[in-house]
Image (cartoon, rainbow, N blue to C red):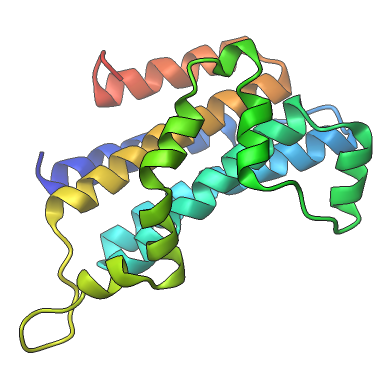
Length: 200
C-alpha cells in the first residue's frame, strides 16, 4: 500500500482515537494513575511516530517504536500484575522489573495467553534496540554508495505506521479496561476496523 494511503489511515485513526480517549476521567488511585499515564504515553508515541514520518524524520520515528511497546507493556503490568508495594516503589523512583519478567507475568493472564507480546518481542527486539540506540540497522538505513542520507524503504515505513497504530489500539483497549468501560473498548475497536478493514 502506498505511503500516502497508510499515512492517511494513521492520521484518521490517530484523530478519532484522541477524540474518544482524551479527557476521559477515572477513579484516582496510585495504580490507575501509573497505569493510565503509561498507556497514554504509549498512545502519544504513536502520535509522535506518525508526525515524524509525516515530516520525513524517519530514523527518529523508528526510534520511538520500542518506547511505545515498552510503555504499553509497563502500563498493562502496573494495572493488572503489580503489587501495591511495586506501584508505590515505582512512584518513589524504583524501576520496574525487566521487560521479559513483565511480559511473562502479563501472559499468565487469560486475556494474554496467546503470547502475542513475547512473540513480538522475540521477533523485533534486536531491530528495535538498533533503531532506538543507533545500531547497525539505523546506520545501514542512511548510507548509500557515496553519501549519508536517509535510505529507508517505503515498505518498512508503512509497516512501522501500521504496527504503531495496532499497538495504539492495544493501548487504547488496555486504557478502556483500566477505566472500566467496555463500551469505549468496543467503540475503539469498531473505529479501528472501519479505518483498517474488517480483518484488523
